[in-house]
Length: 155
Image (cartoon, rainbow, N blue to C red; front, side):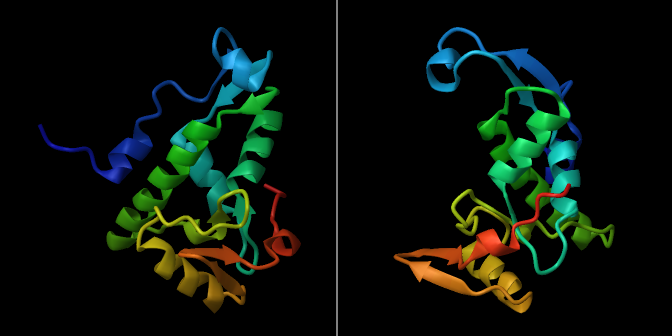
């Protein structure tokens, strides 16, 4: 069986987005209420809006999506996975000369560069520095210094 391409994974929306009730064991971690599970395309679209010189975080994306869908919160797991799928699908689209998004501008919640994006942390570091961001190294990990001052959340 042939593996799906990143674009095929991106296009497989699995009837998403949808809002679900937080029930059972999930209430221990998230409390009661509702949770939106976004679609890959929705996460891609949001990531595409971050302008040069700015950054956003997975938490900013989640906050926007929960408000958009009138849910108490947005699933952090699927949002992170779909950001990763979006980054890889973007690279496939670029290789076909069909566009792409600036996925390197989407950071983890603490300003950490996402090493799982195409090219790893070194490539994200280079792209962010090219846009004027100062990158600092803590241990083996890279962070955008002062990212809060360049945070984009006006999706």
